[in-house]
Image: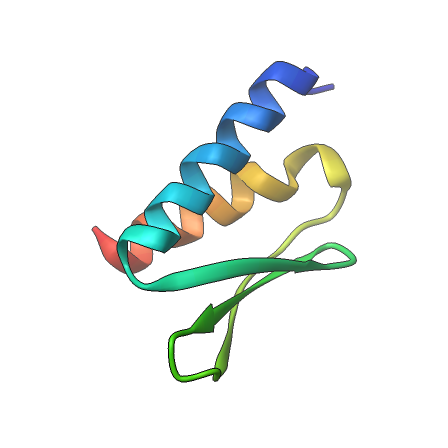
Length: 66
């Protein structure tokens, strides 16, 4: 089980990385989607459980932007 502190840290890192790339993040159940400046949305990641939600999103964003 992932601690709340780690989950929060991963969320903050994911949000910051998305913002640096002109994208906001939204959660839809166990999926993370990005919203671009033009209003279009893009699938980022899907997780098996809530504990891994932001970790999975951060990994996907790093792969996409780095």
